[in-house]
Image (cartoon, rainbow, N blue to C red):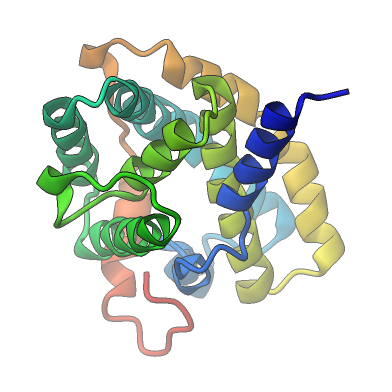
Length: 225
């Protein structure tokens, strides 16, 4: 049997990674909408490849690696380090839409956390990344780093699969197959990100940047990015 604190931490983890969290995640496709429009992503298999590339080349070595530093800064109440790594992550967003996506969802989560009495950081009153707000909540609720990073990566994966199911479109069973298959690869991506040295942090996904840029002028859109 889990202890009550462990059970509560698990429930908080599920809450943080839920697609029902009211931070507007359903509004963003992160370039996927244009990738579908131009024919780069047209099927369950091509969506799997699109997401697998991001998981290994960006989510792990960039998002998870920076998240680890944000979590440590939040745990040590080091506002300077928290602000630094927050800015590093936002600086790696290659387009205005990707930056707005991260900034808007981070601000929304931070507002929600203030309602939950999670400590706000005065130096991060503007342009808060989603990972920063997520790490603050994780520390406040006693989620260890390995659990928090898996929850963060899973939330990204689930959001992208949901977007792909709507856009291609795919059936719900296909979406679940994608989550089942790609979910096996999340632990390796998280482990690689946690092992990153400072000088190795970063991600290079030209196709994603191009898709995001082209999405800004796409004629019809369901998503904001």
